Length: 105
Figure 1 (cartoon, rainbow, N blue to C red):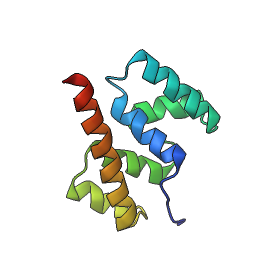
Figure 2 (tube, one colour):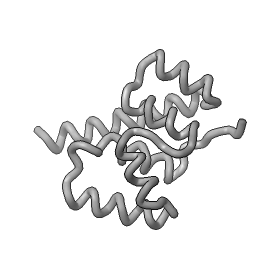
Figure 3 (cartoon, rainbow, N blue to C red):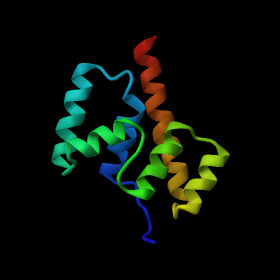
Figure 4 (tube, rainbow, N blue to C red):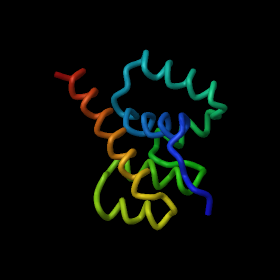
């Protein structure tokens, strides 16, 4: 199994999943433009917003970002992600959620 790295596509997929229910129209437009620039299709965008991916490892990344827990971390590691990647996912998710909370407050 290939070693998974958090690249721009993975970061955007995480953002799409985390923002699916509360993204502002301007954010949705930016995300879609960025996704197209990364070569993502409409189907890739839609499935990321639903919390999944056509790529098995990216599905585990998104699941872990949506619900960071020890169980999901273990599942991600079994899928081939290493502890460093899991820590990065936790940071990305926490950073996004803290930014979202600042917008709401």
